[in-house]
Image (cartoon, rainbow, N blue to C red; front, side, top):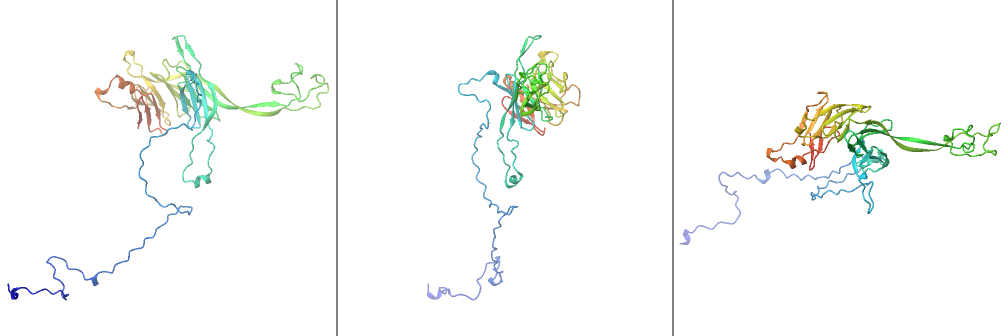
Length: 408
């Protein structure tokens, strides 16, 4: 093509006119019309303080969750640990154990019919209020117990009417309310329940008499049980002179020893045809229950020759028997409510205000299973061996052969 037909070259010099914009696009705002840029605010770190004026540590990021480690159970205290090569006797095997309500006393029963009591030694080691306020957490320590006393609760017996030997093994122990510094507890074997009182007694020893009971004549000797020695002897062999002794010394208490004595206050017997499996004292402090395989009896602590049958599951024909009672427990705060478990895995809640004989239950706790899943072995492992109320009485903990269950 000819040079005359080619377009003229574009100028690279800046133009005084603004560039053309496409239709529909917003017009740009001139720089002089934009608001001035605000300075970025200066962030100040605020140091937290506690109430006493000391600077609190800066918060740190939560650490990453560590992998779950299995619990490491260890003994904090062991009683009756046998030595190397020492065999365990059958009478020394523990068959019952129970803490009192405060947790300061522990009672154990063995197959030999003995009850051993332990008491907490660190219960009086309280932290001062000033030290407790300085600490951000409560100071907790392992409780320590020491041996207190032991006594023979039950002896082996023989029932001549039924030709049945009753062993001395302790099945259950229950603590009762303390009164005037004395501890009370119930213990039972298969047939007999006993109510015990354990109290400290101070024994005083009196000495420093100026009479020797061994040399004094029989008709003129003072009470020899209060004298433990003689500080002076008369030259005539202990015979008093007509004028008497020149100096009469009064008896002096030399020492005081504290000894624990266990006294059996009541014996509750001949009320159960079957073996007693549980006892439970009431919150009113006056009554308790005892349960065997088919019946539950209500007792008064002060009346040992009479009891009231409140639950009876014995059928008219023993061939129709399908379940037995395995455990019974009073409610911790409601004196009219109790619960008992059965070998079928059910728990029945009973209200004593309904009737004298509690044939019907107020509430039933049981686990429903599929109709075809029940067998002979499932019935065996479903049997509840023990039940307990929580401290507030809102939950029931039951134990069978395989699991622990909580009922609301």
